[in-house]
Every structure is written in structure tokens, then in C-alpha cells.
Image (cartoon, rainbow, N blue to C red; front, side, top):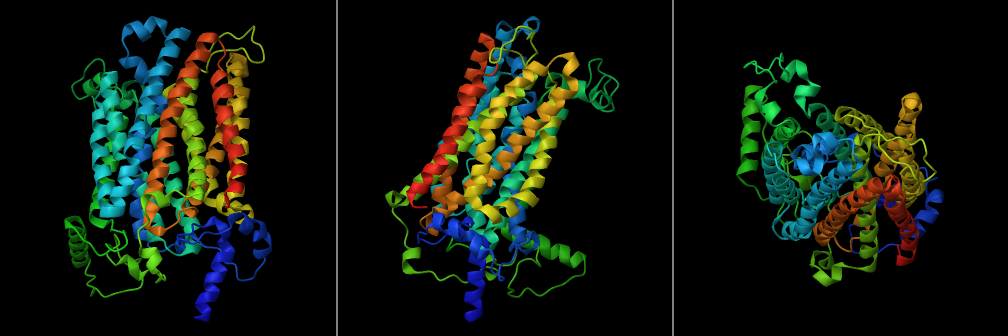
Length: 565
């Protein structure tokens, strides 16, 4: 017992307030952060490595499931300007008006609606998904969401009207309203506090990786007849019918290929989840269905082929099995579960002051980040303007970049964000705490947004090198801030949870609020962007909306100190 207590004390020293507290006992987090530098000097502090995480097989499957949202949501961003232009009536965006500010403004408005429809659907179903998973289990909602995502991606790829695009985007949003449940499963799979900081970095890390791949593939695979003529062009390998315009279906549906690839990847993730993802809802961990039984049968068949016959016995780790066929609870510590911890909290008792403050902070981040993710590709795609008589605030135009160039730029710096999340974030968080890292990112956001529109003044032919350097700084700064902010908000929200029994509800509510923010952000941002284009002030949306919301989030992070955290 003494050794166990010492290990737990060492874990609390190494993680401090930055790890989610899943017990119903409140803690003074501000106090923890203030004494953290003194505690960090203890010789018992150990650093958790990625290879030390328990239940790696379940975390791997959960990570694959997490790919559903970035693949379904952000893949269209590099080519959204051209996609919306291709489906709008000629009276709104005709080919001869492509260079006109009015056409760019209308495209911005409609693309904002298209982007906002996905998180709006998530908002409507996030809390019901969370309550359903708290009552009937996590596995069903995750598997069902993947199946619908596959269908929605296929339908979106073959849509050639704005109405049908909107329908399939909404359906994909309904399917991905279970993001909060995946965060809950992470907390239930990794129970020991000393592992949870690393574990809670995993899903944002996979999300960033999915965004990188999705942006790259979306930009390169859109309009394959133009971007890959050697495969889909008139003389392309796949043009077996020798159609003079190129592969027939690629000409008829120029934006189908990225969506079809997304559907193929998610189909593989769905199959793996069906046969390997185990239930983690407390009290129902031993429940098995046809998919899990099929997974066990597949593993026994593979073992017979490989002549590795094993006798299944109870083990203390599921790391020696594939697809997590060992019971999860053998790898979990045996927590002391009190009668109060088992008792389900009433719905009204969930929403403590601490939870509400964390939820507000959780929702403010996507309110500006999602708007940036929509506005920036549209801004880069917009045709440049003559700014010979520009003033410090009054100038217009974008950069006129192609979808493939935009996708490559965003994905290249997304890789930098992944490296930052892997190697810098854990060390920085160990030194200044979760709240400290969060505030660093909140300082970066307004500075980035305030300077970004000045790229328009560098759109001339003679400013090529300087334009690319400035563009790189803007993208790198925003991605760095986003990479540090997202896992911090997840950890802070989990810490605020009053009881482990309501984790699904809390994260469902967080995902619901974040979805509402991701709905409002692109819609309002697209409207203000269009207004700025019409008035000849391209920076209007950056200064009037993005900077304002980012400053509100920064101020709120300091006001949270008064909530008892």
C-alpha cells in the first residue's frame, strides 16, 4: 500500500492540475498551478512516454474513428470557392463575372452557409448522442456515426446542386455529433491520471493529421482532369474510352474524387471498429455483439494460419492482443468506487459553475477558429485587386491561388502543428500548466488575425518572395495557436466534470456548444467577409469579427480564475 500511495503521489506531482480529475471531488486548480514549480523539483517526477500508454489497441481504433470529422468536414475547404461557383446559377456567379467583387461576395456567402451546415447538424444531435451513450453505451453511437459518414461522403461527391450539397453536409454533421463520446471513451480507457495528459493529446493529434491529409488530398484531387491530366485527362491512363474531354465521370463530377477517397478510408475504419472497438460504459464493459465475436473469430483464424496457437487466459494487459480482445478492465487500476460515485447525478446537478465556465471557454475557441478555416481559403482563392491607392485600412482583393496550392500550403503547416503537438506541447504544459499553454495560444490568435489581411498588399508580381514568407508566418502562427488551444480546452473541460458518470453528457454538451460556434462562425464570418469585399475593405472580417472574438476568449480565460478553479 505504501508503494502504491507513493506512486500516486508522484503521478499527481508530475501532472498537477493539467490532468482530468474524474472524481466528484472539486480541487483548487489555481492553487495547484501556483505551487507547481516547487513541486516539479521533486526527484520522484517521471515523464510518461507515448509507448507507456495503456490499452494502445483501443486508443488506436478510437483514433481511426476520430478521422471521420476532419475527412468529412474540412476536405472541401481548399476547393470550396470553385465548388460553390460551379453549382450556383449563372445569374449569381457567371464565368464572365469571375473577377468581379460581387461574384466573389456571393460565393463567400453561399460557401459560409455550406460550411456552417455541418456544425449546425452536430449542434442539434451532440447532447442527445451524449445522453444516449451514457444510458446504452459508447460503441453503438461511434459505429453508427461512421456508417452514416461513409454514405454522406459518397452522396456529397456526386451532388451537382447547392441544395443536394447542403443535404449531404447536414447528414454528415448528424453522423459526427459523437465527437464528445470519443473524448469520453478516452477518459474511460485511460483511467490512471498520470497517463491522461498524453491520452488527451491523442485525439487532437489525430484530428490535425486528418486535417493535413484531407486538405492535401482535397486540393490535389479536386478537378482531377485539370490537376492530374496524366491520369484523368484526354490522354490519361484511366481514360479508357478516349473521351476528348477526359474521364467522363471526372468531367461530370469534378469534385467527387476527394469525397470518394474519404468514403473508402472511413469504410476501412468502420470495419476495424466493428470487430475491435469494445464497450467502455461502466457496468457494460463485458457486453459483446456480433461484430466483436466476429473479430475474435478472425483473430483465432489468423493465429491458426500463422501457427501461433495460444490459450486465452486472463492477462493484466491487452497490449499483447490485437484489436483489444483482452478485457479492458485488466489493464485499469482498481479504483475505489464509493456509493456517491456510483449514484447518477440529476441532470440539473451536472451544470456547476465550474462546468459552465469551462463550457464558455470551450465554445469561444471554435467561434473564431472555424471562421478562419472558412474565410482564409476563400480569401486566398479570391482574385487580387489593384491597391495602388490603398490606405492602412482600406484595401481589397485576395491572392488568386489555385485549390491545389492552397491545400498544399495548409497541409504543410499542419504537419508543423503535429510536430508541435508531439514534442513541444507536453514539455510546455509540464512547465506552465494547461491554463498557461492555453493563454499563450490566446495571445497568438488576435495578433495573427490583425496582420493576415495585409497579404493583399503583397499580391503584386514584384512581391512574390515576401508574400510567401508572410503567408507562411500567418499560417504557422494560427496553426501553432490552434494546436496548443484545442487539447487545453478538452483537458480543462474534463477537469471540471463533477462525476465520472456524466462524462458523456458533459462532453456531449461541450461538443454541442462547439458545434453551435462552428455554425455561427463561418456564417457570420462569410457575411462580414462579403460585406468587406463589396465595400473594398478586405480586412473588415479580420478586425471586426476575428480579432474581437479572440480578445473575448483571452479576457474570459482570466475571468475564469474567479470561478473557483
